[in-house]
Image (cartoon, rainbow, N blue to C red; front, side):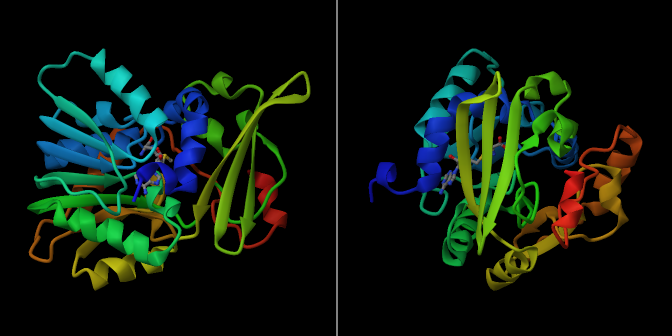
Amino acid sequence: MDLNDMSLSKSEYDRSAYFYDEIMNSFKMDFSFYRDLTEILKPKSILEPGCGMGRLFPMFMPEAKAITGLDLSDSMLSQGRRYYAECHDEQVQIEFIHADMCAYEIDKKYDLIVFALSVLKHLDTGEKRLQALRNAKKHLHPDGFIVIDQAPFLYASVSTDWIDAENSLVADWVPDSDVLNGYQWKKTVQGDTDTLHWRYLDAGKTSFATQFTTYRYDVEALIKHLTQLDMRHEWLLTEWGVNGLRGHGKRFIGVASHPGQTRRLKQKVVEKVLQRNERLWSDHHLYLANKEASQSF
Ligand SMILES: C[S@@+](CC[C@H](N)C(=O)[O-])C[C@H]1O[C@@H](n2cnc3c(N)ncnc32)[C@H](O)[C@@H]1O
């Protein structure tokens, strides 16, 4: 099948590369987690399906010798290639591959495979999500780990009106919230379709608008898929930062591995999070039971 015809997600990201670069590439809430994990695991080879422009690659580079990013969107990949062509780090070999995360075939096994930012939510059926995980398992070194950050909904679990980005939870994800100036986002949740809209207002008029369509993927369904694939899993955090240590919530930030893997990571990750003692990221209400509570975005 021609990759160019196949996905709504591809056309949305192809159209939104400029916006992604300006806003989403400045999201840093998960950086410390990936830095910690990379320090603990010291993976030499890393694969990221749905890598976008390689936002997370700098977290991997201190340890990795080879990083493979795989994405459906040509615009996201071209921007990523431009960035890392300039980076001239001869210690690390970086490649971007145009492929569907459900259907690629690389003649190599990786130490670490990364599904960041709820990327599996871009797949519109359970069978495709299972296939993406199956494919990852196939490309995983026997001692390796697949790290998965998966929330069932993006930002909020209910539809919202337009919200000023700089006064919302997103402001917590960027070091300098001025970058959000003029931007607004809103959610539309209809059945299993979870759409995130963004727009830029210039003198009160919309001068740019985009959207990202994703599909609800519950943590229970993810764990069922891992079990079906005979994979072990370990839940590390539920949210970024120390507040994630309070207990299991509805977001899975953890690892999956082959059934023979005996190494456990949670204690090490928790120690690192506590040592850093940095500001808490994302202390927001992602899982709202009802609309009234949505005022707190
Ligand atoms: C939210 S972005 C995340 C990008 C990157 N992981 C990050 O953390 O910045 C989701 C990415 O997944 C890609 N994507 C969506 N469906 C895909 C698929 N079936 N195969 C490969 N990539 C896909 C999109 O093109 C987009 O670049």
